[in-house]
Length: 209
View 1 (tube, rainbow, N blue to C red):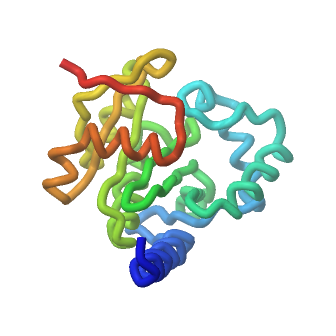
View 2 (cartoon, helix red, strand yellow; view 1 turned 120 degrees about the vertical axis):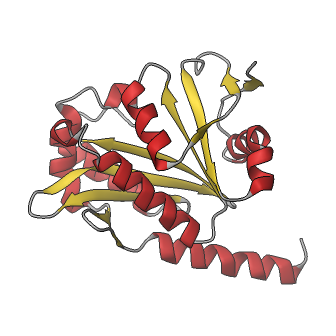
C-alpha cells in the first residue's frame, strides 16, 4: 500500500472510530458507550438468565469481572460496546460491533424482562444504521439455530440468512448478512469468510446446499 493510500486509510479508520464511540439516540431507546458504571446492572441481568449460554461472551462470576472486561475492551481499536438504555428504567441490555475494515459483526442481548417486546429489533436497527452512517459497508451476525426468537428479531432488523455453514464446534450457528451493496450481498459467503480470517478466528466454513 502506498503512503498516500495508507494515510487515507488511517484517516478513514479514525473517522469510523470517532463516530462509533459516540452516543446513539433513537426514538425510544438510547445506546450509550459501555463503561464501568454499567457493570453492576450488566452483571445482575446477565448472571440471572441463560444469556451467557446464548452468546460467546465470558462467563462472568462478579460485577468486578464485568468491570475489568469493560475496561479492557474500552481500549480495543475495533470493538464498540454499548448499553441499551430505556427512559426512566435505565439499563436494558447490551449491543456491540466488532469492526474489521469495511465490515462489522453485530452482537446483542437483553435482560429477561425486556425480551419479547420489540427492544431487540429497535436496538438492532439503531446500531446497524449507526454502522452504515459511519461508512461501513456490511454487518454480519450469527445465532444459534435453535434460538428462534433471536432469528426472528434479526430478520425484522433486515438481516438475511447466508447460505453457509460452519464446521464443528460452530455447526450449531446460522450466519446472517445486512448490506445495501449488491456486490457485497452477492459475495456474502466470501465476505463473511474474509472477515473471520482477518480477525484470525478459528471458524471454518462450507457452502450450504
